[in-house]
Length: 320
Image 1: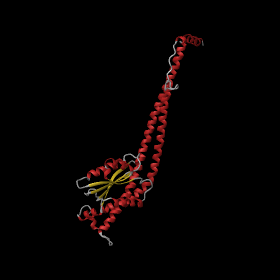
Image 2: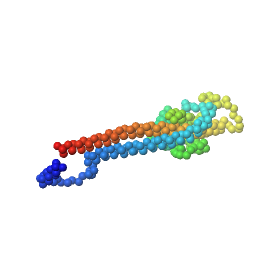
Image 3: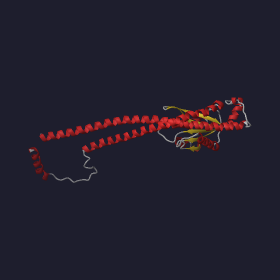
């Protein structure tokens, strides 16, 4: 007490000798002292931790939603494989047939956050376009899905014949896909349709696939020349329809069946890839949260230690 009283008396005695300094307005508030800046740094870390926790909740919820959608569409995709497999046995999958007019049907998703399935489909579509390029050949695109459209429109805008989006907004059935396939056949001239999609195998694995549907004229040409479709003449045709009419019906029905299976397989692959991506995101958010918690604890402990040192130093100075 005596020391404190002596300090007060000394301060009053020296006060008239000290010239007052001009007061300047500062944008720094009185709370932003040294301790204030320490509390702000911990507050920033705390806000970041809160943001990461919210992101982790969102990714976990999206994983659960993707799992639910995958279960709903997986059975339909597996059942749809029985539609196009007989056509493959009958007409084959003539991917190497040389034709002049190629139309690449790229199947993708409308939403992202599903890994690289859309980029894979676009890369294969571009590779097919280069592979079938030539002086007397032309290659056009029919795009199903917003993501493939956003990528192909950058360098192949003039080659896009048709673009359709929001296919997965409502559950698709065969009738809807057959109407879609009929619109494509009416508006697009082609010798070969090459459907690019991702075939579902498991939650963590999918196979990029190309299915080829030939026009009736090309099928008849290959049959007559004894090429890859030469065995088609060995089948007996019943009814009054001509061979060209039967091939026309087969081509249209084959394309609708392949399209139906491609859309469902790609939807399965999309949900499986989204599950994997959201699971990885949740684990990465957990790792980041652990690092932020460690940083927050270290910062808080350093602040407390510094304040204790300042208190002890001040007490020591007063006692000395």
